[in-house]
Length: 268
Image (tube, rainbow, N blue to C red; front, side, top):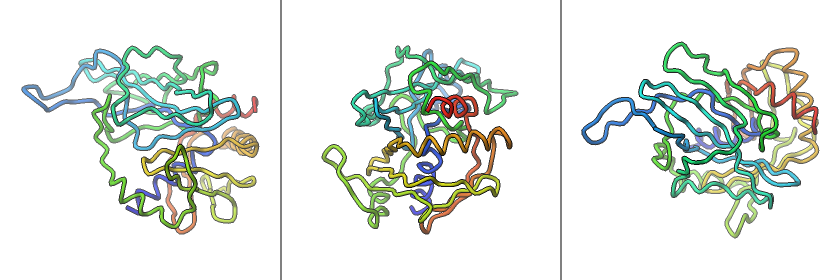
């Protein structure tokens, strides 16, 4: 359980300047009923999220989510869209009932071609004018199938995980308990390939017992983005991120969405 908590917290840290886009996803198969093998989705299908992350801006909140279209050969198109909430209160997509609106035709922030064979797992197209482009920071090559369109495969012990939050300060989020994740140089260290990332001021993230994470985009995010943009220009977009928060620590292989970060660092 502590490992899962660590993964959740470091995901929040890495995503502190934005959200994620899936650029690779396992082939979707089905073994139920009389058929067993690769399936054709026939339309875009929502990919269940292990945790939902929203970045909160002065004019609204962004929650990036991904959908997948797969043909009968296992070749896929992956799309990243934005669930924008103009009230800036992070009205998350309801995964309990499944977000299965396959007719969704919003503007995709990222589109990735994911063929079954001979694929570059982190290739993508970025569309800077789409809603939510400002929140994109990471590319994710998903190795494990999470489930699609309400058919979730991820099975975390959410109540047990909430128990691990017991030592965190709490606040209220829409009438429910949310746990405060303070991030500053006093309790956190981040390094990219051994290079220490400066932390400007303090970020306060919030996580609910449903694994919904909210990150207000305060002015210090501008400084983080500009530093990260310079680092990427000098070192490339891939790195091993060594992260510690309190007593938790881990190494995470990351690839930054270079186009998005450069674009947003210039706009903020």
